[in-house]
Length: 122
Length: 115
Image (cartoon, rainbow over all chains, first blue to last red; front, side, top):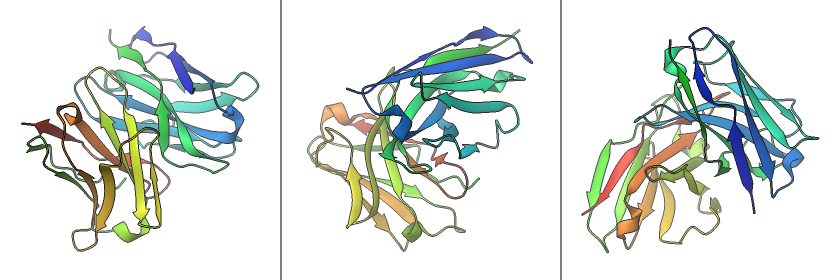
């Protein structure tokens, strides 16, 4: 069965950096695009970034463009999100999720991890 | 980025049908877009329900009952999620999602209450 396990969250001061990881299993990781989606406390879902199966296509939300970088290591079945220059408004649960279809630049996500909480506070 | 609009709340009684809307901005035509729908219950990650483009191009999430279905309202420029035979367990937040251009965008979500 598909499993996505996020890690790397925690409390960080404004302006600092954090790297999230998402360990994937139960599907052919190198065939599927992968997403990061976040949810601030008590708020709705906000899509953050997507990376194509082969790493050639990356797209970001305007709110994180230039500060966050999505990447993947297909040899380790792992997705990453490097978050720099963090702000208080980046405080959220961060979910990774897999694309529905294989071998596309991006489709919507189907399976989601349980999320990791990032708190940006001084 | 063009954000779809969802009513903040909706309610219906058990056994009835709920019709949730996802209205697209006027500069994008719903006829040209896949509409994705997600359900989220408190303390849990979102669950993929379905995507809908047309009656011949749609997909259901794994294990999602057929009483969840999608459609479009061209006159209202909206995607529609219909939940028939409402059950108490359907009480949740529902989000739509689209790809208008170079980014995915969620609607603000609708909190569905089963009375």
